[in-house]
Length: 285
Image 1 (cartoon, helix red, strand yellow):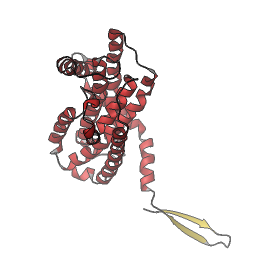
Image 2 (cartoon, helix red, strand yellow; image 1 turned 90 degrees about the horizontal axis):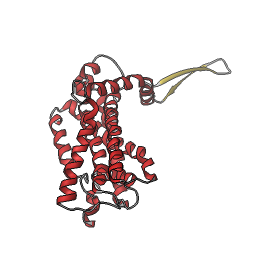
Image 3 (cartoon, helix red, strand yellow; image 1 turned 30 degrees about the vertical axis):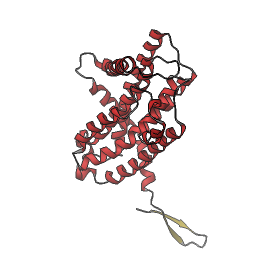
Image 4 (tube, one colour; image 1 turned 180 degrees about the vertical axis):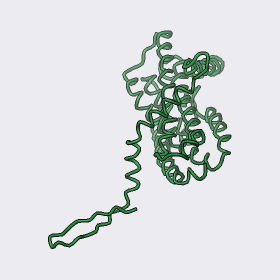
């Protein structure tokens, strides 16, 4: 509804002013007002994730550690693929495994978040964007814990990263945007078409094969580099390797910026799709 404001002129006449619609601005202000609910949902998801498990948050270390060991043996020892710079192959794999685990977990959690919170969505008002955003943030905790593996690799190989490691929070932000964009698409579509509950695991599995998790993207032929960069995870992983490996890390500038552009497009279109669907969530879910 347009905002109305009444004012009195010098002649004593009242003037009614109709201002443009402010609903969209109010929505983003509500996100800030409901920030406490955001943290409550995020903390609840973190507490539930490892509840009644034998090793608790240890799973945040086991999954990337085992993935790193398997990929190191297959691609580093058996296939004898090259590393980047002077980094041990295990470090190369970890620099790909960490963002991939974050991306895949955040994407899956974000896609299912609305269905998992259906009872909450149909009872009270709050900006629905808080639900998928909180689901993504919980995956951030796993990624931070996984950094202990990097510390272990540094001690084991007596190999130390450069100052670029300080830029890792920036790349975590990029990985968050890369997972939130398609996650919002899938979350909104999942409400209307439950088929996407079965599509998401397939997408995650397929994405692992076409992303440079266990190998360097430098082995991709030059004529395929731009096509390969259409996968937004390629740019995210190259950014993580630039930060962790440092000097000698491969990064294709044109392909990298193409990946970043796709991340931005997916994020903006995902937000737009979610806002469109948000008005009908309570009726459809």
